[in-house]
Length: 272
Image 1: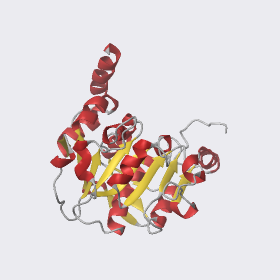
Image 2: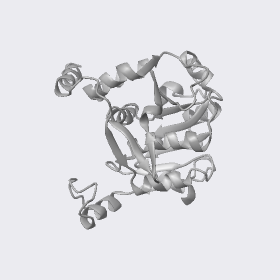
Image 3: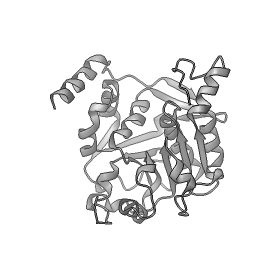
Image 4: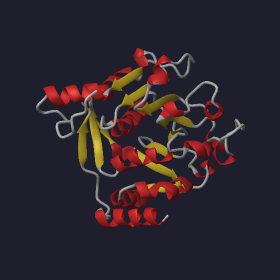
């Protein structure tokens, strides 16, 4: 406990906690562009990238693109969740510094994202957010206790995203029920993003069955370990080539070696 306390306060000291406007603009990497090109190929897509591939920032941009391409109704909210709770900190850290991303000649503006965060998840995991991110979130996010606290409708052009823990939405153990505080999400989920989705996304998993009860317009697992979702047999959890986009460690290292302007030129070489 003392270690966590010291680490948390050190992060505040080591980071500029002044609320600054995000300014970075990324150009989408090939696997992000590939996913963007495949959005119309159904109601799901697998985004699989090794660590350092940029899948976190990419998933934010693609959530906006999916909302636009699918023309979501204004009562829908996108849900970001993860089987490893602190994984959700990564897109939040990106959101605090990145203004947007260029994809296929279009600038995807991250300021359109409207943040809603379950307060209990935030209190448990904020130690893994940078000081800058904590300052950004305190200014830009609305904290909620239950899904009932969400607005019934969202403004045109906005892309609402709810950050909530996977284990918080679905009960562990034998229950296949949605926790009451999330029951009102049923029929309201636009894009369901599940980080590190390979861990529990199996047809017979009870927690996964809870999410199938909630429903969604578009399913987007984001993971660095996609094998079960490529070689699986269940219709919903199988992602064929036209519904998956992948960047492997090997691709990253080949780009580093062969491209003098590689985004990965400063990364250490890893033998595969």
